[in-house]
Figure 1 (spheres, rainbow, N blue to C red):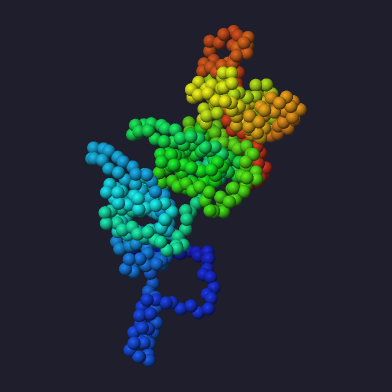
Figure 2: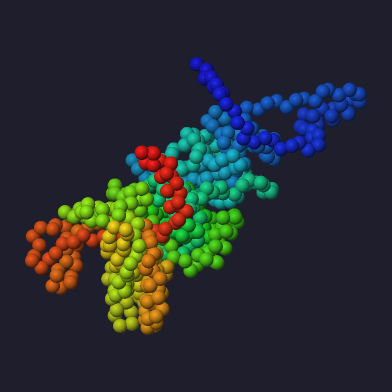
Length: 525
C-alpha cells in the first residue's frame, strides 16, 4: 500500500540567494565532449546535457580513490554498499576488553562527523590492532567498506539510527588537504537549567573549572575492577556550579590550566546530591576551544566570575526519592500556613516552598572548621598546628571554614527560624565562610556587623524541609530523634525548618510568573 501525503498549508522558510551573473555548470562529461569535438573538427556541438536529478542532496568533496563520490553521513543506511565518507574523528574511546562464556575480546569506538551529522564506528578484536592507532581525534579521514548496522542505543547517545562496524577490509585513509569539515557542534545548556533535565539524559555544557580534584580510584561493582576517577567543579554565567566526573583514561590524562574553559559534549545528567554530570566513553571534552561561547565565558570569568559566589544543585525537585525538596514557585506557602498545617510533626518529613525576608542572623557559631577534601566537609580537630580529619585519616595545615546558619525570617503572616548550611551562607553573605571568618579574627567588628546588617531585610525564595527533633532543656543539647514517644521530662519536641534551597529574587522571572498567572484559568475564575 502506498502512502499519500496531503499538503494543507505551506510556509516559505527561506529562499535561495540571488544568482550572481550567468553561471554555467562544468561537468566531466561536458569537458570530455568539448575535447572530442575539437579533435574531430566538427562545427556543430551537441546541446548541453541537463544534470540528472538526485534522490538526496549530497555535498560534493574531492573524489578519492578512483573518482568515487563522497557520501554524506546522514545518507548512510544498510542499503548502500559502495560508499566513501569524509569525516572528522571527534571522539575516540580507550580499548575495552571483555570476558564471558563465549570467550574474550576487545573493542574501541569513535564518533565521526561531517557537515550532515554524526555516526558511531566500532572495531572489534583484530580490527582494533589495525585501526586504533591510525584513527586520531580531530583528524579527517576517508572511510569506506565498513558495515552499516542499526544503532544500539544502549551504548550510544548519538542522534543517528545507524552505526558503523569496522571490518578487516575496511579502508581508512587520512585526508591531508585543507578541509571545510566543521569542528564539534555543541548545543549548550546553562548550568542553572540542569534541574529541568531528567536523570540519565544527555546534554552539552561549557564552564570554567573552579576546582580540580586529584585522581582517585573506585572499585566497579559490575566488573570488580578499579576505575580511575577525577572530579571537577564547573561554573558559568548563570551563577551555578556543578560537579563533573571524569573516568578512566579521561581522568588520568586530564591536563588543563587552573580556571580553564572546557566544553563538554554528550555528558550524562545524574541526580547525586541534586544534579551532577559525568562523562560517557563517547563524551568529548574540548579544553579552551576556539569558539565564541568560550571567549565570552573567559571574559566574564576574568572580569566578574572569579570573585563571585555560586549556587549548586542540591536536592532539586525530582532529584530522587519522590519528594519535592527544591523551590516550587507554583506551591509557595506562607509561614502561618506551614505552622497551622503542622508540617514536620508526628515523625513526618515534609517539604515546602516559601518566600520570606531575613530579619535577624545569629552571629555566634556561624561556621565550623571543615576538612578541605572535596565532598568530605567533616569537622576537623586542632592538633596544635595541624588539623586532623578522622574520616579521611589526613592532617592539613589549615581547615576550610563552612557556614552553619540560623536566621529568623518573616513574611506577611508570621516569623520562623530557618537553619541552613554552607550554600545558604554563601547565598546570603555573598562570600565564603573563610573570608568572613578572617574578618572576624581581625577584630574588625564594625565591618563584620556591617556585613550582617546588609544581609538582613533581603528577601529570598526558600525550599525547606520540616522535621521534628527533640532537645534537652537542661543541657541545651540537641539531637534528632526518629520517635517522639517515651520522652524524658526534660526533653521537648519541636519542628525544625531546614533550608534545602535558597534563591535570590529574580524580578524578571517573578514578573513573568505573575503575567502567566493572569492569563491562566485561575485568573478567569
